[in-house]
Image (cartoon, rainbow, N blue to C red):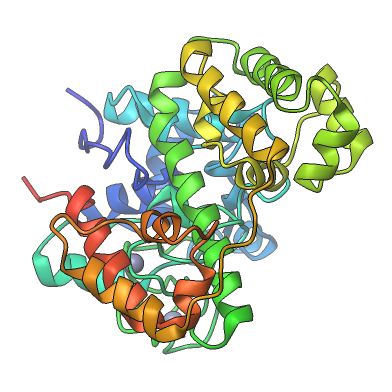
Length: 386
Ligand SMILES: [Zn+2]
Ligand SMILES: [Zn+2]
């Protein structure tokens, strides 16, 4: 028997996998104790080194103070700190896959910059939907990543401030509870989420944000499959193969095409420095290659992508003829009736566009409907209570 409830982690192998800090909050909730008590009394004694350090007021007055510094952002990220938490939690719950609730596998592959965010972020609509449907309320790892600013399911900005007490909070705090503010304990599901709408600039920003969030989701989904190989060598070899095919090994041309600094690209190719996730996503976006292709040791899958990117670079496609808004709207509304509904990028491709900016420009509401319908048709992220 495990010392604490053997709570199953949520969504391993999907873009919506739970975060380790969220798992701790859910575990505390299941035991009806505060995170502070769970960590201080149950988990810390199991760790090889202290998990938390107590703040000055705690040292002065242990009896009624609860302040701790959990270096909370590091829990979901890379490095020693996350390892200690995983170790202690696995000992206490006898769960064996908690490392997949962190980014620890990407240590030495991507730089820490842009990885873990220092404050908590959430999608109020996801919380509300889970509560309404009686699903488990939890914190996806995706929300804890700095580059992700948008919910890929609801296309709304992630919230970072409690609508009741107007304070931001740490990813893990003494009184963290899934779906609730760790300061005032109010439900966070009803925060008014500013919906990103507006002109073409906003649409372009939305498109880029959506691309990033979805690509990072794909990364999180393949994590369990990547274990056991030297990810850093696989990645470097793939990047080299990509440059070799796409621009025949011409680093200058490749850097120009992807809008990355040449010296930086060179250092990634030799493996002397690791790229920021953001830079890698830019390369993937510019060449239309899924980021997962760079991490999998599967040349047969990768080759066609390299060759396709080479073709695109060689015959840079002509700018498609400008269609009237009415024509685009007609294509959109016809596509919305299709079963199953196509993705926005598929519709854009049919029209000869590279991205879906123009579609959002013409009819943002219809685009959102199509995107929501598409996501519902192919992905479920609801984990039912047993
Ligand atoms: Zn959402
Ligand atoms: Zn609050």
